[in-house]
Length: 158
Image 1 (cartoon, rainbow, N blue to C red):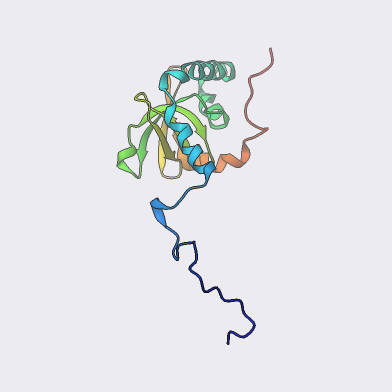
Image 2 (cartoon, rainbow, N blue to C red):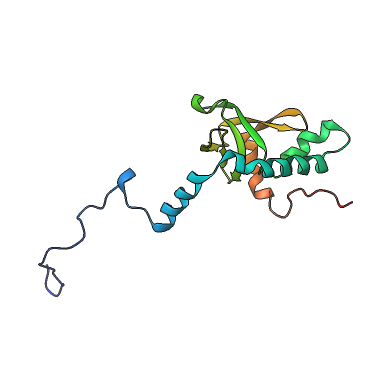
């Protein structure tokens, strides 16, 4: 029953089926966001790596046994991270500097200027701190996301 309904008889300007998948049109924000990561260089993050090393030195206790507990709550932006184990074998041995951390991923930049996204859920990472290599379990870092924020570790006031 079409009585009382508006009918359009001329051809519509919109396609019947919008594109799906990789060929779908992206919003302006999405397009700009992906482009942002393409022009970064590994060398540009050297000051961030040096800052992170100083940050860990300031946080580190006299007793090195507590270093892993401190690293569990420390901010990892600028740290040198390497994938030790992963469900995806292509990710193993990827290494770089952490430039972004989200709830479920680390974004790193590798020495050959490639930005990679590493899922935390199915990976074990190694981080270099104070001349030592420490293992970080990715799934425990997914859970700690809600604990961060104002509770993130800050160096003691001197």
